[in-house]
Length: 222
Image (cartoon, rainbow, N blue to C red; front, side):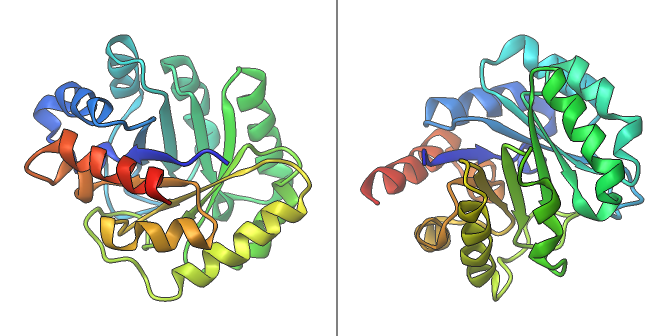
């Protein structure tokens, strides 16, 4: 499966998001990861649909929207209309009967559908959705804040999840988010991830383009 870098704009300078996005693209980033937080599902607030709309007008990078919100059904249409290329919904926000129609609505809009799982949630929670999702996002930190360290045991979870996805009999991307650095990226890829979300490791670097390019070189050397 194609390996891709998805820098998280949560770690970017909010005063110049477009410049940061363009700098990461110049280094080879394949998409932008946009963390949406409501202050309830996680104890923080972040971006709304207007940010997606603004970026969509100015960048060709696909925008991956990660809904860390208590009621994703109240925001889904707004983010799809804003131009999200992909929308990730946490399995912890509802039952399969509630989430399945949301995933189907994402597909009906022409976007990619994904589910997200927290570090302490059993991986079996994603199984009801594997027939319809394009991607599963595995959190390798507790969601809500950037700059956290990669949690111990995450590599084993990546390997276990990759096996579940492969058993589904269709190609499903495995994205990981949280504490991803150049030092652990190769291990994450070997464990089975193929989309790496890197926030501080890209946008916290002195040279964003060079930081993104370093990840891309590592991908090419694998």
